[in-house]
Image (cartoon, one colour):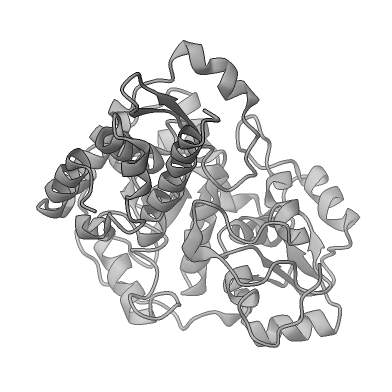
Length: 145
Length: 279
């Protein structure tokens, strides 16, 4: 199954960028991650505190009338890398059907060659954020969302 | 009581007053490498614990020659005072400082409170990346007295000598092996090295501003758990970054004579065939 077109476009864009441009673009994604809508603040407060050493990622998946899914995030500004990765995934997958979200392979980001800009360890944040998004997609499919 | 070696710590005011001092190089070392390009202390250079300081092939640090090259490119001479600061209460700042010590750089400092405190005080952050005139830097042979390898750790464990596990309580108990966002840094087994006491790194810093706790508080914390200056101490965590902070605290703030950081840490021990584990 091909990647959802918007996500594929972002992957291709990054693949053609030089290192400096990758860093700038990632920062631009981090800075453009919209703030959590006020109506989700209560959900946010119910989130389990995450143990130290990792970035607390709050994610909420919302069902759209057309069956698509919208993702909302709350990630602290002191973690721009995770914000940037989440912002890329939100831009690439918002509005997609849950099945499309579930079909994204966990290594979809390899062609972006991000390891020349940030270390492999940080890029693996993609795997964590994508896994969270897939959990929301599963909930939407089984009707618990 | 003051810290035993207060000269290894500088405050944000001091750094602000020394931004253009040619004998001082300020270096940012973060967990999140995008923080530096977003904004850093004027004149500060960046090192990344992984892309700058690790060997490109082996799981190890740069060789002595590679380290010399990095230091030369940072415009550091053997006499430059290097001040490290970073995010996450200075974990990776302490890691970088520890590596500079490993290759014999004497004049090193940590900026108390790190990046978070500097930002909180609304001090200037800039995007300009400085370039420094290349120097000829000569590193010393690696100082093995501050770095522990697995065989020494096993010996320390078997002889029930002080081992400090500075990870979170759930990592110590084995409930958590790897962090959800860090799958590559995992281990196949959970638990801790037999005999290690649990003193999470965060207990050494003030939550409000990321500065280090007072000497009396720190002494009570470590001595209260049986970690005393009369024996060699080995600290570890998951990849050696949080334990660099504990190493800095024990070595310089409390002045313990023999402290080693086991940088292999749980990602080595928890994968090591035949290594004893306690839960």
